[in-house]
Image (cartoon, rainbow, N blue to C red; front, side):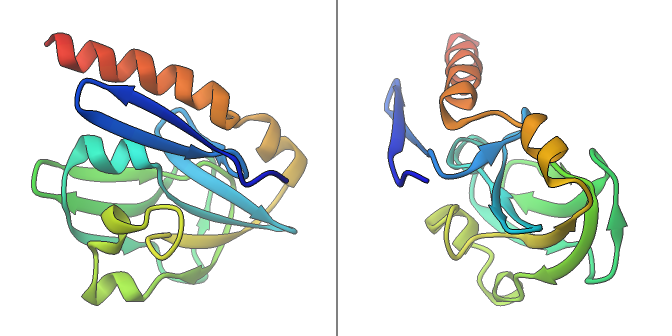
Length: 149
């Protein structure tokens, strides 16, 4: 695993994409830890949606399918239903977000994680996600389209 961080500069914004995580098209990052997957909002997603005021992952014990809501995040701009990037069971949630939801903005790939899931099929889950380079290309198209609006 590499700890390389890819960067994308669009207009006055700089977005970071660590290469040691995978990404869903919805902008959710996934760090595989054995049979578990730690998830959170990508730097691009959190910047695009504004300051997080509230973040609530599904409770421990909940089973989620790929695409099921795994968390709700409220920002100053929007309310987001976060689709699970993997199928599995929620086994841990980031309780720090109850009192410090801004961690999602301040440290999206570290202290701002949302939940940990026990993954049903790790290989299939990995294969369905994008690499940092693949997600950077998607984010670039989306960011440039938003600037033109």
